[in-house]
Length: 557
Image 1 (spheres, rainbow, N blue to C red):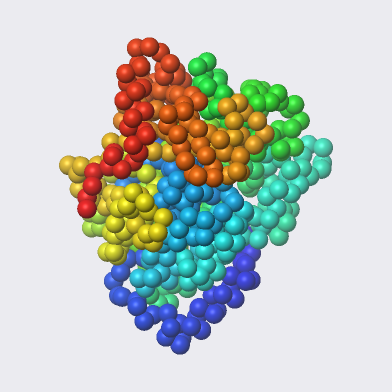
Image 2: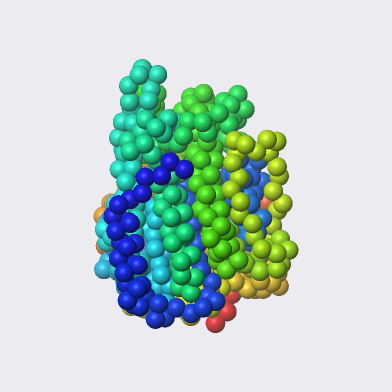
């Protein structure tokens, strides 16, 4: 790895060592408690080999999946980085965090909710964050400090090269540097001769090595990788894995005829990139030329494989340091992201399956291994040297509907920590509770456990028709909230009036509806909400959606 470590992060580590020597950090440590490695991937949809997407090479994550419970139907609660991360790190839904944009800190704006790492920290764990875990770029939503010191034992460590995200560092055919969407690079020519995920992986490897000096101190290590978030900046050799001649268009590349305009994202964050600007796309619907569509998909695939290599480095160090058999590992995408041309769209900021569904893996030593009792093996797999490519044996999987807000209570139960109770109807003054449910029993028993009948997501809009702030409206500009409910057979979405001052959604004022029959229309192409023969079904689903998540989950408590 081409690693440039962050000096400030090292200084904080030395402070930790000093405190450890004084005995201040181990008073609550308990021998034998499992560690937690919490991996968060930015903009990762389930486009991985382990999710039956053979076009993408992801051997290291596939290997992790072979020793993990793979959730086929995991969904986030809002398809944008900051609100989604705040939601699953507090186990509260966006209507409870009251964070739909990037403009507020939940502890002062909504309620002083205990976070997932905070809960582990308060129960004797050393907690540490590397990379993008909370949302650091618009820092107010995590109080400009990634919620330190409440969530973390030391200040979070961020790769310094992330500051070049909006800079002209992408070489173009004209010999000049540009701020492009498509940005394969020679790493040695980049600022600081590195990239953010290389730096984050390197620091994670260094930290895991240091953890091995005192295995009586349990740790909760969160590592957030930036790719495959735009720009698609990655080492250029990864592009060679995906010849453009082998890249297809999306299977549903057209805007559905019956799609209400309020449901469409005009992909404004992509349009500001120089190479996209040069296409002179019409606003708001495009379309993007087919040859550039293929290039976008090619570069997304390359970014995923690059990120997979970084994950592999971290997993390998976990095993080499002797932690593989006593560390719970989770991997989740912060939202499904990138419509890669599906529905004629190219971003997140929507309520389709492709933007709410995420990969979710949970590895529990001795429980999710292919052969129980057999230790997981996480040797690094170099995709460039794996010839021919080997198929990885598949591990256990579940088709049940789960949500990102379920992770907090699940990890607490798996680590034998106090499990947060279900939040009351008015949750704002309750510090420790969950708006999810632990699926630990599902991991252990796989079947026969009563569970959810639906999962819920939402997305705000400033208007009925796409405009410049449609994708990322500020709280004060939100006028419509799109609530979506995914059952085993349907996806129903209602775009209803919303008051951003009172935080009130009026389900009696419906601006638009969507209904997709997933058994016959898994790509969500045909919106049948306005067809007369489905009026009774729409009415029933609307009633369920308005009642919300509390009425769709089995109450374990």
